[in-house]
Amino acid sequence: MTKFDVVIVGAGAAGLFCAGVAGQRGLSVLIVDHAERVAEKIRISGGGRCNFTNREVTAANFLSENPHFSRSALAGYTPQDFLELVARHGIAWHEKHKGQLFCDRRSDDIIQMLLKECEAGGVTRWQPCGVREVRRTELGFELDTDRGAVQTPQLVVATGGLAIPKIGATDFGYKLATQFGHKVIDTRPALVPLTFEPQTWAPWAALAGIALEVDIQTETHYPSLTGGKRKGAATARFTEDLLFTHRGLSGPAVLQISSHWQAGKPIRINLTPTRELANLLKEAKTGSRKQLSTTWNQALGQDIPARLADTWLDQASLHTPSLTPQSAIAELKDKDLEWLGHSANDWHLTPNGTEGYAKAEVTAGGVDTRELSSQTMESKLVPGLYFIGEVMDVTGWLGGYNFQWAWSSAMACARSLNT
Ligand code: FDA
Image 1 (cartoon, rainbow, N blue to C red):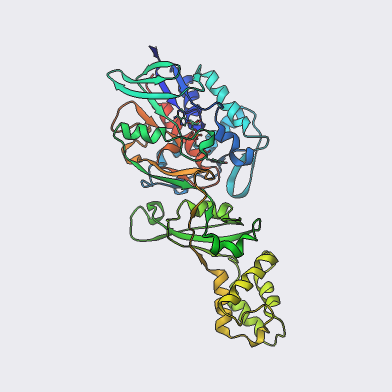
Image 2 (image 1 turned 120 degrees about the vertical axis):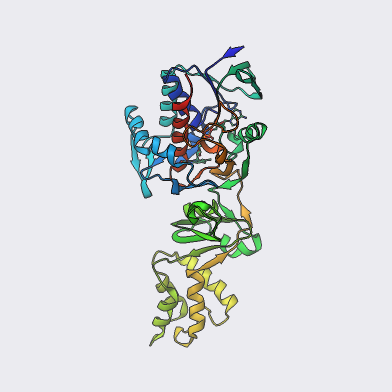
């Protein structure tokens, strides 16, 4: 039977990075992946340019039932450390919005870098190669793979989450965790567009393609935002771009809030975060001969597309018949103008679901980190068993945080593996 010091299942971001470091520490490393192509998620990430980290990364950028778990690994391997590796490989990058760092050329630069690091560590890669069964033995673990049986004292699970099944995502990591007695926090699609009942959405569907910056918020149950204590509802809030789609809402604002959104609960959107519309409308009344539509467009400002402003008014007049676009603003009641202003400053809407794993960037939930060491990622239940990357219940915000978690958790594990 073939023997290795460590076997890593999953040749994605975390698995490849861990393999390279472990190999360069002198361990004999086998990495196994069932997909045809290596690290497909890196390839498609960041619109093909891989948002590989963020300038500022702290535990507060991650959602988990165990909010402090990520601290140690993030401190042990920082974005700056990854940037040094990127520089050693001569990869050009640039900073975008909110500290997000992207490749200048394409994501493949990062994949090639990881493969070169694996090569430098003499890593053996079996791909495509499925893993049929994993057994615990006196010597550690035995794996039945498509290329034969393998024995190892240390097994690293780096099989990621469930997002985008068509490029290889599976529940392997969760099943294996359960097989070895670990708890798995319920999984669900995150960083995902939200959808609405087709009938409710019909008036807005025609706005598909319109984007604007908004404030968005929803109730969250994550303890990270409630100071680690569950003292009732806390609010998750982001200021980002929103995108109208045919079936609902997307764009960074909605992807961020989707990770917190709980089925049945509303989300709240402020379409003009810097404008108090009720006041602007009431002030505009005095001595004005203008129609409501003109005043409304002026109050919303230039950043709100006219099609959205018009649709809003059409919908408002269904609720309050006096609010027709042609109404003379001077003749409208203050309370109706207040209602109109508030409706856009605090739009309440309840999604009927998400676009699911097919369109999600990540999976929220996963292997319960309370049963893992935050220093090494090793199981507290099964010595020699490790979980790294997205398979764990650690879900990053949009903006390079999920890759940084892959690098940091992989490094914590790779440094602690026995030679
Ligand atoms: P990852 O998914 O990278 O790797 C898991 C590997 O395990 C895969 O190669 C898979 O084939 C393999 N595997 C699964 N089941 C297996 C089985 N049964 N047997 C053998 N192998 C198996 N993040 C970010 O920080 N910046 C970004 O720009 C983006 N952009 C982005 C875009 C899109 C479209 C998606 C879907 C995701 C992102 N992400 C992102 C998220 C990021 O891609 C993700 O969090 C990391 O790739 C997670 O790294 P892992 O190594 O944990 O899993």
